Image 1: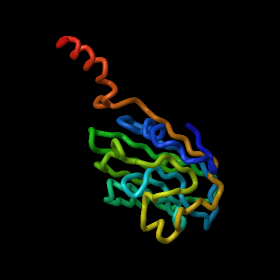
Image 2 (image 1 turned 90 degrees about the vertical axis):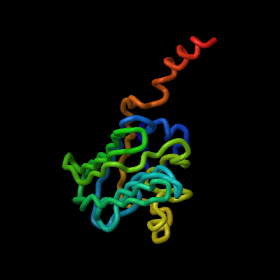
Image 3 (image 1 turned 30 degrees about the vertical axis):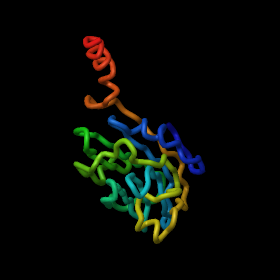
Image 4 (image 1 turned 180 degrees about the vertical axis):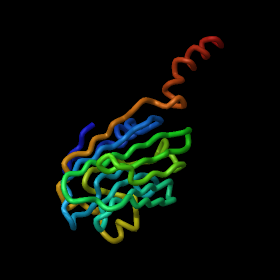
Length: 182
């Protein structure tokens, strides 16, 4: 799914299907100039979510694990055209492993972040802004919805394969097992 600045918030259920119980990634293309900052993408709210920002020339990833904030500095962004790739690999039902690269170079990673499940994220995906209830309250207090001030070209959500523990993979099995007891 390709999203552009100014796109309305992607509906919550549709947003959830892009990330639930699967490997997934987000690609961000931007033409960065010194001094530009703001939200690149945000998915969620104060109850749980994740967001990627440009703040004071650096890339910042925020993960709100049901109110427990984790902020990961990803380093400086060079001027010019850049491609950021944010990748999530769930090693198990309850966790995410996150990798962030810039122009093909690994910038940050974190293992064991709380996976966002069921009712979190409760809000959909925003591009270039964090509308409504914010993912990162500290950023909201300082910058409000923190619109990106530069040239954000596109944000691509790339849902990957479902994990082995995805509930939808068990539907046929459960139907067959249920028939045995009819």
